[in-house]
Image (tube, rainbow, N blue to C red; front, side):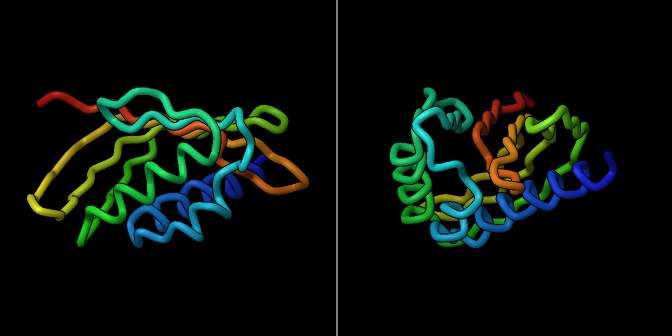
Length: 128
């Protein structure tokens, strides 16, 4: 359905907006608070459950003065109450150093109570 497709893309955009603005409160409204949520930052091990995921974002935001993120969506698929977005992330991160990274990412959303929540984010570095 076109409506579901658009709603998933809006949820995906909200995730990257919260990421770029380093807004932990907004992240908390986007992510499922369940213990089954998973996050794999590029080059890192899997984090399971919202508390571990929240702590990872908090640490990233704490050590980052500036973030700029561009995304290039490759695919959006919706099947019932599950959806995924496959995309390329281009991240400029300035903390102590300047880091430019490109990752392939998959974001999986689950519709709960009529709203799409992020339940899985996996980023893999693209080797130049």
